Amino acid sequence: MSSAGKEREQKRKLQHFLNDLALLGSLQGFKYFQPWLRGKEELLLTVVNEDLVSFIRFADSHSKINCLLNSRHLLPASPSEGEIAVPEVNCTLFLLAGYVKYGRPYAWIRSNHERLVSIGGMDSMVKDTPMKLKSITDWQTRGIRVWDIVSELVCLCSVPSPSNPLALDMRYIKTLPLHDRFLVTGALLGFLETYLIYGNRDELHYDKVVEEVKPLRRLHFQALLELQRLRERALKSPVAPQGRTLQDEIPSVQQVAFIE
Image (cartoon, rainbow, N blue to C red; front, side, top):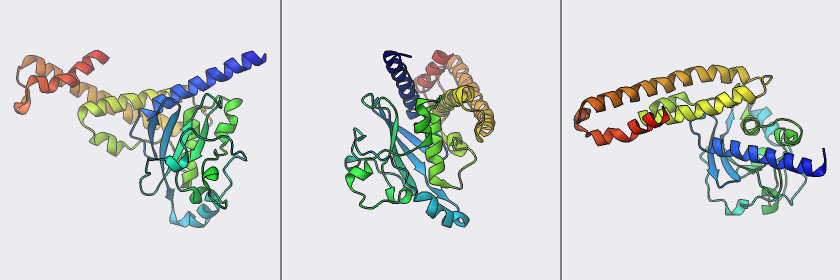
């Protein structure tokens, strides 16, 4: 392949990654992480720190690995010192980005540096050094997608690694209001079913995701049926149940009709 062809292919792959990033940033309901899209090229990822007591000694050595690249010129567009996002308790914040100027994705640690790396100084330049991740190293030669990078970060923060880094928090999802539950489960289904098509079937957690999708699909269609019943009830009566007006019910009903 010519140099021009390689450049076009790299741009195509990066745009594909940015599309994945935008999709992931619109989702909620994962058990081990929460994404937050920030602009066209950046996503903040809050990952739960989960170490079992029996693995603490191993966790100490596991978390002090040198997971930074030997390069300090690959700085993020948003410097660490200016970070306004505050991670939740017992969580680590990461910045995942696909800057056009670098032509490939990178990840930076935004909090709890001392938990993950064993380096002295911890000056701002070190804090803004990108991570050395297998998924990102393989991005150039293999079909790496955003879920591969997220899975690696989740496993880096948990000892032992979870059996399914893409697991859902079904308890939280079930507590969402009906309309939100319908939209959230539909978006998650789209993401996970894309993973089932394009994800690596040799991954240990692939079959776990397959099992995760089944109850999610049931929950989604249950929400759809409930919304359809609300629409039918609203069309039959000018006044909604419990004294609410028909207009109070219409927004969610209209969206269901549009999706159908």
